[in-house]
Length: 379
Image (cartoon, rainbow, N blue to C red; front, top):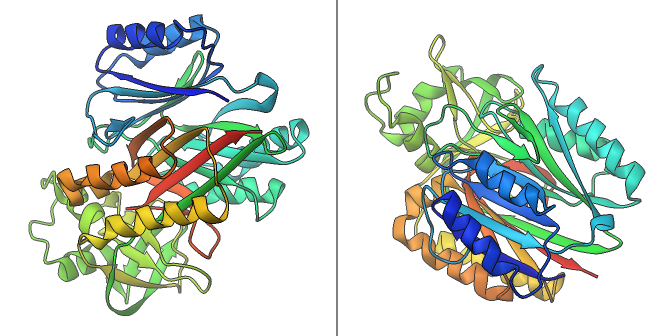
């Protein structure tokens, strides 16, 4: 499989880059599109659609094809994967029936491919990505390869979108199912945030809605441990500060802890929604703001993936949490450069609201403040 990555800050720039990419006879069949809401994603989608290219698309909090992060741009990975080796699915979940919707997609994919793997994008900040993964597992089994991320909206925390050919929604999932007998897909989700303090018990929660920890409203406890001031609806930076620096770490019996920052606050009771479930009775810790070894851990994790599971790759897709660049700033380029150099193949990525992947030594999880790297190779 041949791959090329292109980028641009306008429809015209993407049009030019697309024309240049096919000038040598390259004929892409699939485009993985990470596009800022500030751009006309419909116009860009129409360009790809006119070329007969199938689209997997998410809005973003930033985009990249190499080591330099961009804002207000489009980053697109073009692949000439054989059409018999993949299928795109797009389904809305207006009734919040995340697990059932994902299960339905997985059933269709399983009917088409004996061993499907999944690349997933989800929209709506309150969507429970954990339930989406459970729905896929219900059909494809607990060892299924499933990766992806939650769409962003340039840090507005208001409305995110996923899209494909002729479809666009703020409450849906877009999914590429690939035939694993024909396309090898491997990934890793790595975080690196260090915990602080003792374990605390979640005393009231429902799914991904956390009410109290140690019988104290979770927002107030987070503010106390983070030393956060002005914890009011008028503080427009509050959610960014919580998500980037002081997420909960959900402790697991198997594998690494999973990050669960607050993304949507319910001011009536000072509770908040996280990107994945936090079961009542589970144990959590708070986090320290990150230091330099966070980046080293990610790069070493990807290097280990190459050494142990994926010696060669045709292309690389990266979902990196928006909170990472908020915390790491210009140093984020070092992490992206390190990841890119592992295989040195075309890459496209986005800064996401959440990440989907298998925790190190653990199960499929919905992550935050994590980098999820997915390598693809057509056999």
